[in-house]
Image 1 (tube, one colour):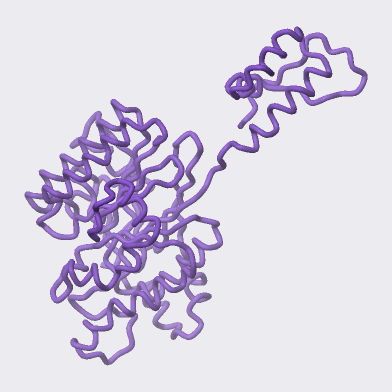
Image 2 (cartoon, rainbow, N blue to C red; image 1 turned 135 degrees about the vertical axis):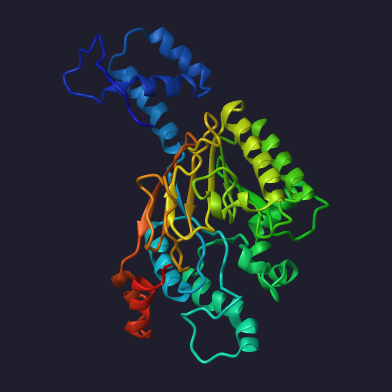
Length: 385
């Protein structure tokens, strides 16, 4: 509760000062449901010391019940130098007090050797150890902090497949919170999927899978629309946060997004329109997160493609992959040749503020004491187009 203008009691006669009250506090009492005490306040007339003490007795426990702001962190694309960068992301996220970290895909390169791996490797050894390496060097540093995973297109490059992904990362896709949410939606649903959602406080987090050109397929789009429609009808849900690998069509990252394939254009636009309805008609806070393009970019849907249908969106493909050049017309706050993560602060009213947390060479060096400094410097200075 943030006090507004302070109110001076009109008939103050006490000799010792007592705390003044804001109109917010009086409104909090009015909304508290304590009918008998509100009646007592009404009979008491202008506030005096006794009435102020009564107000204190009502406001203090109510203020203590107000939910506090909290944080979560997001980034994606940790191939190439992810074994160097992700431990620094984990250290930053843990020190920030964030409640969870969300990885938006592309864990390892798969089509070629990642530069941060020990050489020499033969292709068979690499393909059988790439994902276990990701777990050991990029997920383990988060310790007990919850980590949510979303597949990227490199998780579907042969020999990698969705089925293999579900098997390898089942421990992260069937956590108690995700299983509980899935069964709350449908008690008969025991199917593990690459897309899912979970509700945390007043926010519905929806993880989508657009890691290959057959997505979003009809089944996933139907599921997604049902989730959003249910959120629209639920007053307890104030915010919808959607995360995926490739940005939806019409973003500033348009040449490396769902614009790239026909199915992506059609189903991606349908998903965006669904979210626009939630924002514009149901008056929910809506935010869209993606990676795939290896740079940081805010406000990615403020384009001529969407005109007056702008939804807040970010691209944050900055977890270790080779850095891309910024597209023409990119927002001024966009950055490339950087590593880092998005730190989001969620407020009780449903609004979310985000800030990009940029990592330095010293940050990477600090969490990689056993790595050659030349490799860390190469990742900082040379891992780019």
